[in-house]
Image 1 (tube, rainbow, N blue to C red):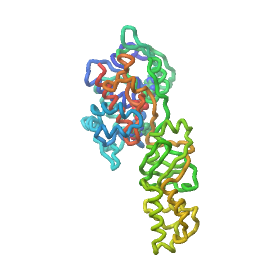
Image 2: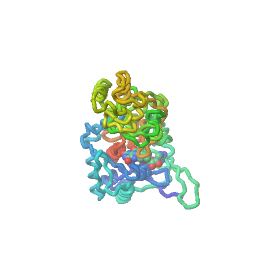
Image 3: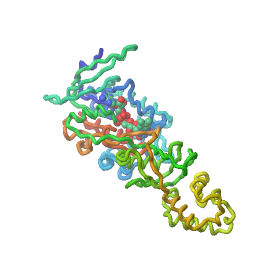
Length: 419
Ligand SMILES: Cc1cc2nc3c(=O)[nH]c(=O)nc-3n(C[C@H](O)[C@H](O)[C@H](O)COP(=O)(O)OP(=O)(O)OC[C@H]3O[C@@H](n4cnc5c(N)ncnc54)[C@H](O)[C@@H]3O)c2cc1C
């Protein structure tokens, strides 16, 4: 059925995602004589690239200082510090521009192709791979890896038939000198990696929204607040927050879900959450503003529910946060009520009751333990000629292009090192 199996390969890349493609292209460009094969188990390559960033592909982030860049990685930041001095977002931008794909920067630092189409990114990767002589096989899943006593690896690959109307498959042997594992969050490959002596940090989801059923935010889907601080156990995050049908989303929540990914997993996504709707106000500072507002003569006969003391809080939210005070004028609100409101504004207690999906981006935290990999070459410290790149590693970033950037960087480093 297949002819690719009959050949011995110099380099096999398991996984036709961004990390695998970037590595294969780099390796082929540096070593034109090498026979390089990408195995992709799905019926198409670069599947996640095509759906990424809401179909626009947030390729990277306009952050060009490695020391700052690593602060966006809840896991893997330390290891990536050196790696980013070799290949960072500026290099990503240059890589794509050199090949005719211009990127643009949005006001929040996210970078997209000017076409606003993820297909532009997938197409250029496919084109460059083909141009560099990299072979790509779809419907080909890596099943098993054994070290060859004479060096290199013996592989077992399940190759599905690509002929229309057929859905049979065969398991075929394959040999390669070097093997790069770039299979993303695939659970079966983790078993292969373990069989080679590597250990795995157990995977759990990162970048998700919070399910919160609470009267104070009920019916407010679509309302957003620009600057909110969230506290969940030891995790504190700050940024915009969006109220949704199910609870809360927006950058502050996504950051909290990423930094607190393991804590929330262990707590089965049920946890108290403190929300400071006023960014960095303390309850005392909030109380001061509330008191001034109450004592201001022009406010005396105005309803508290419809006259906010803080312009940054949308009136619909303000109305629900002040609901416990009832239908009172500002002048009639007691000090105790104001104190309670200040606490509510600068530290309201909510409860996370589950997680929802953030459709623009999603990653797993966990993967191959980082101390088992040399981050100068991405080679395994345990098995010679075995390499790793991308999400298969215990690296994950915040939303904003950081996850692709770690795939570009680790892919590029692996591709530079494999010979
Ligand atoms: C909906 C969504 C949107 C996203 N948007 C963004 C974004 O805009 N910006 C950003 O930075 N990040 C984004 N991400 C995260 C980003 O897609 C990943 O971090 C990135 O794709 C990881 O690249 P990778 O090459 O390591 O793995 P993947 O992209 O997961 O590629 C791995 C490939 O390996 C294949 N594979 C798995 N097992 C085997 C096997 N045994 N044999 C052969 N092939 C195998 C898989 O089918 C897959 O094609 C998004 C993620 C999702 C889910």
